[in-house]
Image (cartoon, rainbow, N blue to C red):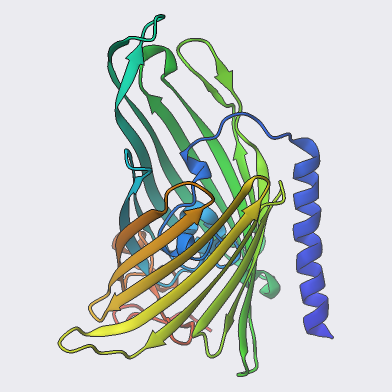
Length: 356
């Protein structure tokens, strides 16, 4: 009964906030590179990551997930899109803080005059920078004595977006995302080990005005998600729903303790995903390989309608250091690490344990 009441309360909070935002906003014209699914692991899972948000990609999908990260991760990726455009990103994130950069570039575009004759070439580049922060409510002032809030995280990200192309089409702007994540570990040791519920309110900002004087507003909206860890945390399933009705569904299954010849592979991850919405249907699959020294290699395949399939390859590395604040902080609360096989928190040997 207590479990049911907790789930009902969480979904009531998510649904109420989502309805409030959706009733106040309308879909706008600006479709930036932030509309593309980011990262490699999330793409292999159909973009269903708002509810999970359990690695460095949380800084893009749900900054509140930074509240509960146990290791600092750094990653990058590159993808050739449609045979001519190049998409790439870099991110570094740990507990509390994350920083990311994304770009897409299309070179040698033909410029034509009024008669349709080629008058030269130009390049198009759009880029984005994201600074994200997340914390559990119990670590914020005035909430430290409320035990229930230790598993409720809140996040905020500041996004800068710019376009560099012909003079008239260049411009820059910014936006804010705010988010929440409730982390619910299960006391039982059965098939269901953990539930997560996420909410993101996206693109609260002034829009962009190009040098020509033409303006576009952000496509403001919201996204809710639920994620679950199953089978002794060997499997993740996730579902995201955007306010326009787009659905993201994904899963990941992890095989641990694998060794192939001289390759010390500690984990092999298999992923499947599906995205369906107004005018779009995409299928995705992914593969992740974790080397025992902490290096991760990830691949994602995405197939969308009649468009060519896209292939995304990325690499990441995770450190024992839990937070980017560790080099400047001696606090054990910011530098604990997490045993990823059990999701239990442990503290670094060179730090004093927290007082009980």
